[in-house]
Structure formats: structure tokens, C-alpha cells
Image (cartoon, rainbow, N blue to C red):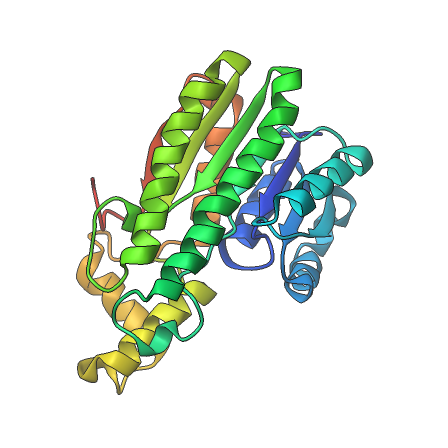
Length: 266
């Protein structure tokens, strides 16, 4: 199998993209250490991934706390083996109350930069130090096509993801001498708990959408803005991650891959 006996760490594995990415890696033979701040979400993911129970372990940890995260990675390597693949899937759209606003508040900047950027920096730093000692590794960050181009109403989230793209390019250059590839996926529109919040925000703040359900708002967005007119899935993102983590991508580093049905092509 593609990743037989290789160990991947996936942050934000408790739901949404992180769960879908983990499933794809497991299907392809990887062992996966699931990390999330929410212990109940981790339990739920473990139940969904029960067919692969021999190849998964769950770890509650806060990616924004470097001391705690370093202890978690040390524990993973002690219990489960050397980390060969890191997927940074932990992320937030904004602070609480996002649904009732139309522009980013100061607390949204704090929340998105703390988790989306600082959390990614901490995870990359911690795991790459382990990878350096072995002169190999694959790091795949998760940004967003929102980080490709500015748009109204979501500046904090978009800017945090743009920073992740820039971080990826910088780390790729820095870690190349250690045979570590660093790339980034930019997902489009996926029906996850994060998009449910976006839909609810649109329903509350846009009178033209107030009569629609969250799912109807999402479907409307796909039909109007996505050239391929089909939603993306967590599994789609997982397949992109699997490519970047594979030997087929050994000469690819510092690159950004949009998986968004053509919604944004920059």
C-alpha cells in the first residue's frame, strides 16, 4: 500500500477536513495520530474510523501551546514511532459570534491568527525538528482559496490563510536541505461545520437568504460561483494531501494546490 507503516500526524482531526484527510491516509496504509483540542470530537472520529482502529491513536492537544504540543509529539514518537508526515488541518473561521457580523472584529483576528497561523508554525517547528534528525519528511499545510485573493467580510480568516501560504513557501526553502517537502492545499467550498457557520452568517445578515436553510445557501453558492458546479469534499482534500505526502511528489515543494472546482484559479 502507498503509505504502509508510515506514520502521519493530522491536527484538527476531530471533524471536517481533518477527519476526511485521516481516512484517506488510513485507506492507503498509513498509521495516523489524530490530534484535536476537543476530546469528544476525537472520540467521534475514532468511532467513524473504527475499521482502522489498529492504525490510529488519539491525542488531545492544543496546537497554540508550544510546550503542550511538544510533549504530545514526544509522546507520539515514543508510543507510535517516528513521524514521517505532518498535516496541519487545525483551523477556525473566526471567534464566537461570527454568525451575527459582516466584517472581521479584533477578536476574529486574534482567533484566526492564533490557530490558523501560530498553530501551524508551532506544529511545523516541532515536527520538522524531528524530521531534520532523520533527513526526510513531508509537511502538508491546509490553507484556503480565501487566502489567494481578498474578499469582503472575511478579512481575518483570508489573511491568516494567506500567511499560511507564505509560511509554506518560506519553510520549503528552509527545510529543503534536510530533504523535507513542504506544500499547501487550498480547499474551496466543503460542507463542514465551518461552512455551516458561514451559511448561518449569510442567513442572518443577508435578507435575500433569510428564508433559506444553511444547506440551501451552500448549494446556491456552488451553483452560482463554482464553474464545475459540484461541491468539494473532505475526501477530495485528502487525496490532494496524499499526493503531496507521496513519493510521486518528491520533487515538489513550496507549492499551493487549489482544490475548489475552479471557483478561484489564481
